[in-house]
Length: 192
Image (cartoon, rainbow, N blue to C red; front, side, top):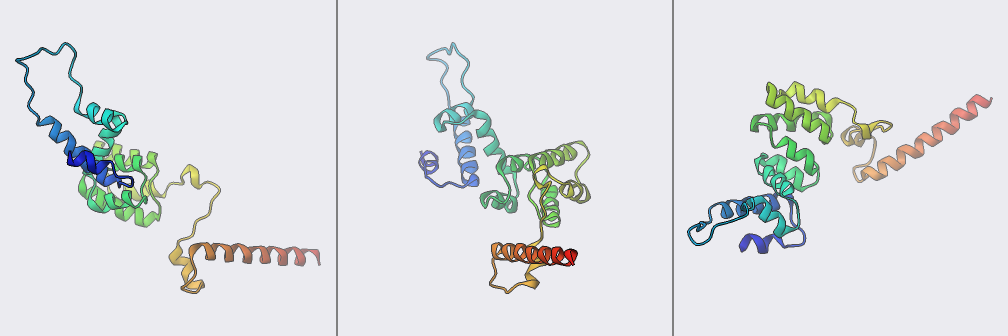
């Protein structure tokens, strides 16, 4: 009952859902079932199916949430903060704890969150032969489909050129304004 009432809150973090579903699953698995009174003619529902029906989601979604409980706390926090998307996080949960710690370094190195396909490749590599920090950095360094046609700068690289009070948005606006001035100057110089 505690889990059911807690999970009905409006703003619940993925980590809270994951722990609630895991607790509920364990409670359902530990319930005794009498078989001497009636015979079940239909196969009993899986516990994850029962939870999914009660929550209005699929049993697979319940399993994915429960899978998140295998993440190290630092990664779980990043999922809660929406720094890592849900589905890539599920794939990362299959990495060994040491590999997950290495992944944090690879993510910092790349200054990017993993795409689903990157997380899936790390999971596969981990299951086949182990996924090293170098493997992860190589995977995270790849250009994502979304990044094609985009240029990204690290905020830390740009901050030395702007007042400390500038937000990333103000930095971006200023850079674009300066590029427009530079382009106009180039065009004037070419016309001479």
